[in-house]
Length: 447
Image (cartoon, rainbow, N blue to C red; front, top):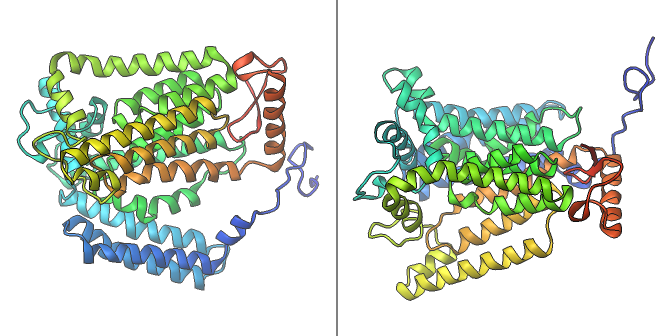
């Protein structure tokens, strides 16, 4: 028997699609899509003109035509298939093809070599750090868990083309990034939501992510892990959030602000117990990874992970984009001190904001974390524009996932949050009697 149009199989409640937002209609316009591809092509085409790094020049020369072709497809193909084919073209030409080619020839930015060497050192010596670094590439500014991404190279070597590609740390950076974003999407979306193939392809093939992924990609796993941690915390998965936060906090110190943001969101939405659980797991696992290395190699850890990124060593970090902190540090010792002072003041301001207004959704938590990281990257004595990919994705990805939730879920959750805040029920004041909590997008979720 044929079911009623719009009614779920089995005679359930009809699934209703809310009206498309103005932003969604705007993004679906073929002219807007083609304009986006044109901007991406211009971005890529600039690298052969302004960069002196061979890998970036190669990426720009390959990616620019791919973006242009994607723009042509947006304008000439039927709207039903144009976005998917355009995204596939951009992903192939701006990500897959240049990445495989560079991996086969062993060409990458220095951070890939640093991570792969760290894994080899960890297996041979028990420490991912060289004892006496003498040049820039001798320094390893990452925390011990980053060496995990270099293990495939240490195990597979680079004897043949398959080993060269599968052993490349960039492949595992990219896979971690994609898997974490997919998992976060599934947590933030309704249970029956489709897999976000198109938005993930568009994001990954955008110049902001594609260039970093192809030539280096060391920040990509941190981006994905932070997004996943916020989604887990928003869903009340304290154990999972704690484990993911521990992984993030042992990759790079820039992930540390994610811990208090996620813990305070758990406390605000689900009470002290879940917040304490995530905090204990995250902190305990992080210390379990870092302390054994620090106990035997404290000098190398302090010199390479703390002092080197802050520009306090004889060898200076190559991260030199003209951000305010870098410009100030370039003025001499006084400017360097001013940069560090502004960094502390900015961090304190974001911390006070977090305490005054704890986030109650994944979007709010990611926005707050993005604000803190933007302050840190902008005011740090050494930084580069590429670091801003992390706060950018933190702002964009949860909103894309939230857009997929039905209007009914968002409305119910928003009113539920307001009622809990007014009555003092839930969050920091106790448990809700009906077992229903605001979800990450403001929706009602059972636990």
